[in-house]
Length: 204
Image (cartoon, rainbow, N blue to C red; front, side, top):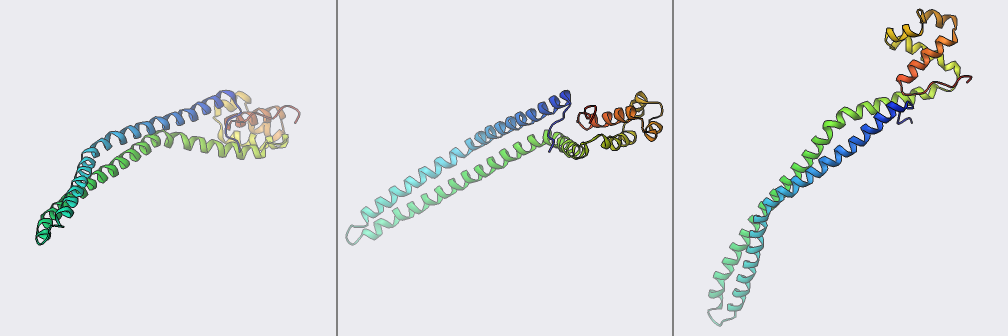
């Protein structure tokens, strides 16, 4: 598989683009983590309420157990403490629910920010890179002998701009039919360079 162009200038641009994609992704992941931390600060009050209410419920339960042992009136004395412990547990559950909701929101915002930020560049760059890799890999499969130059010369006449063909020959099609190896080689080289490949060395 051909990942990068064999043409130095184009290969440099491709490597720079890939490095930029990695740096861009790292930047947005860092930003997403910062957003997550900032939003999670909003969960602190809910967690504090949950912790405080849980502690208070434990104290009420302990106090109720202590007075519950009083003969004859123990159950009556314990009942209010049990009620206050239950109310505290309800407050703790509400605080924990609020904190969980903030945590879910923080995760959603962080993931959305990272995905959208990374995609803003990846959607432009990745299709270009994938298209190049597919074309260059397919082209290189045929590039093993001078006989294959005819294929690339034909593609050049079909795909390359006319002003580039005119620089090679005033009649590239006629030269190809006559088997003019110079023109065929130059046409093939033009097409190969557009695919990011070097022309075959002379004599192959």
